[in-house]
Length: 144
Image (cartoon, rainbow, N blue to C red; front, side, top):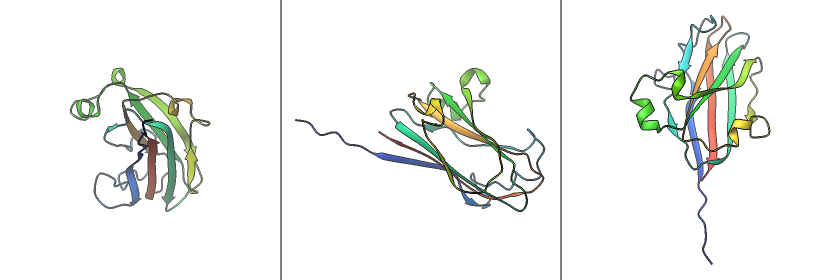
């Protein structure tokens, strides 16, 4: 009888307060829809099952936050080293106009695309509110 290893994978493209690094959300400030997008790197999620997204947002004012997940059958390395177009991925709206700062989890019961195998994933956020995003926790979890 063979045993199967199960790995719990966690990716945090944005975590915590504004820090000036790749996870920095200071540029997702004074909101004009589409003008203050923040895009993560692509991440290899091939072989992941039971994916879950966790999200919490902080703001100096009213929260009005969009989160979009891009999924692709191409490799993360290739995608991170070229200018991607909509032909390279499918965009999935995770939340549109989030107004609560409470931690929320989304799984395959909420988002069908979390059920299907995906080779690479990245996230795009948009702050539609004219108040700076002071912190965000975004996680993508899965098992392989």
